[in-house]
Image (cartoon, rainbow, N blue to C red; front, side, top):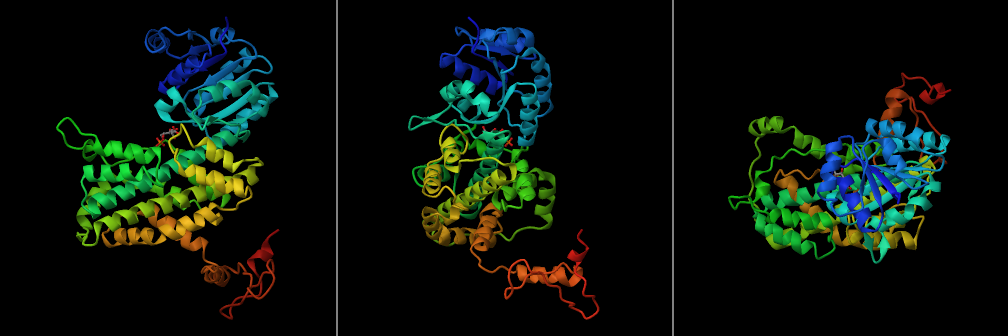
Length: 481
Ligand code: 6PG
């Protein structure tokens, strides 16, 4: 009997996806560049399964039923192109290649089109949930050539996480849309992680709480409006003790790594001109953390005056919970706003409510809060910004005071809160009917004759003033061709 699907790349995510498929009754053929790894897998975790080992791409392709489905679980970038190049001549019209890695969406755009010309169907699928998710049910965000979807839908939905019996795997959209949505997921992941880190530093350094005290607080927050996987694992991390009985967390070097998906999200936001400040600050916070030696030197030369917190601890902890919640709302509002712009720019039809549902289970950012987002888009699919939805208007009003107190605490105690405070600045800016950009426009016109619009004239009419009496009447836009 031939295999239903082939999978290339037996690193931990690949192995676990194969085992997951096998558990769901699919026959899987596997290939790995290093044959020893294939053997280890077959004699180890894949023992007593029907998984087929193959040792060349030819053998892999031959072992598959038609139309063939081959899933790549290899490093994003050139390696994906390499396998596509090697596989394409071995496949037949109508066969499907799925890339399940964290590929850049523009690469997926290009690959979908190139393979369409060869009559091959390409899918770029974001897969989230780490090792555990891959093994027991990830969130899957497939996009690409829609003709491929009916062929892969049963298997991808079977292996995905389920919430309320709904699979956390639905078609996202054409070309790179699936990988784009995964990129936004990762950006939001960066943001969620950073705001949790800010809460942790405020509580440990600012309020002087112990790991055990903070563990209890995070565990309690996980029962409320912040209930989410990342809050849950933070509580677990805080309670984890090293061999000597002290918290392991205290011994971990404070330099964050990153593989680039958060950076891509920020770059895309800049390209599309949509504020994505919380995620942007979260990426930069990782960059700042990486400058460890410089920071150690600066800590000596620019010492902080250490202040002791004297207020009501319980009420401050509640305020920090509010700051987390409000900042999280801002981050998702910014992320969804960016997706909206991307849909327009790249000609995708994205269903924002469905995207929220995709993220409810299996993935790293899974949380109860995504149901509120789904409801907001169900009530108004054309919603411009989540902050304008009734539920979030109220939530922001309720959390606002605590959020401000939290940012003030950080400022007073010299504890950095880049994401809490940039989110607050966005919130205050977004609800400002008049920003100081009038002055900015005047400055641009003053030094560069860049022109401005007037509040007492219709939009689209541009004016230039000779501010100094020495300039001419020619506006710089006059030079536009
Ligand atoms: C997921 C994650 C995953 C990501 C890691 C590491 O959804 O399962 O987003 O895809 O690669 O979280 O990302 P960084 O190394 O950039 O932190």
